[in-house]
Image (cartoon, rainbow, N blue to C red):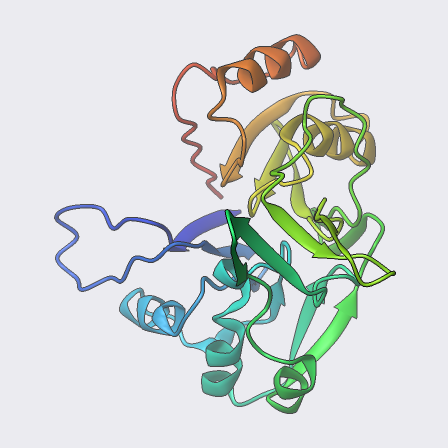
Length: 254
């Protein structure tokens, strides 16, 4: 399996090509003869960077959405517009939930910037998944990730609308990850892992039993920057095959 970063918050110096960076994430996964785009960043930058790397949106076999925040989904519109074909889009059922970020008296919409009907008209074929599902050989979508740890509580500044119309803390129930059952163990590919890194890894290890060894993490790991989270993660997963005292870098090769 090969994973290529398409969109990230920064562009490496000295690439020699005019790659675009933006707040967000997009990864191209090549595995079992398929091309899977995991998240799309927030704009048309995903199409530009794909082109610079020699890929066309029409070559994609499927899209996978980690969760319904604008910086992971805003590029869906542009990918579909350029693909000019129907593409399966795998996601949790709650990705279109209205969500906001609150800072003081300011309230900002941070959900998916395009209506479901618009994306459907452009060719999105929605495949809603809430349970662990193998989308191609050896590559699984997590579905809903149970929240079992008491210390992975999420960001209190993120809110959504409760059933009674009032705002409430957004626990981002639609947060999903990908699990690759590799020969060296489990590889977790996350968009933000809002569900909590420990919860996510445990979910992967359960779904991919008997693989009880974590071989790598790819993508963004929201909350891992806090020292307390790293310490508790190490205690919760004593067989973790990674050092969490420095930024995580994982190379996934064929």
